[in-house]
Length: 200
Image (cartoon, rainbow, N blue to C red; front, side, top):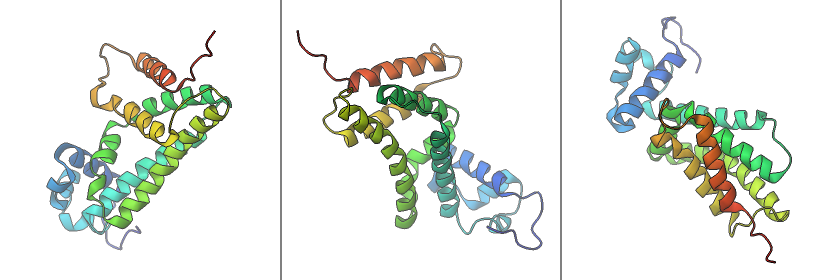
């Protein structure tokens, strides 16, 4: 949104979005007011409306930015061609990317229900693009005999849910390093989709 004449130079969109993200995660979207966000930024509540028309738009912008960043980061990855190697790349990428953005990931899953139907559909469309990237890997592996999954769509959703779940328990400096977590999760995903070896 373009800045309006007379707005204060120190009030920036990024500062408002950062404050909103922190407050939404800490207290929940419904419990946070525009006045609270303004106080966190250090401005009058009316100043927020120079940058966003309402609280839902602020939430939508946060969720959209997260998904667009995720998609752009995945598309920029130098992915290997073989399905198994590409699946491992996806597993490690998703965990690494998510652990670097715990607040954005939490908000993306917990507050989607607070969007209006149109905004919800827009975010769902971005999520489906990301899910399709994984499902395409599973389909390629299925076609080549590397994977055996009864339903690639269901497997896609299950894998993403499992990988995203790392954010609920992982703590930096804990028992397992990020690299070790990636390796363990890759081993679990690999076993879950692997084709059964031939008998005899």
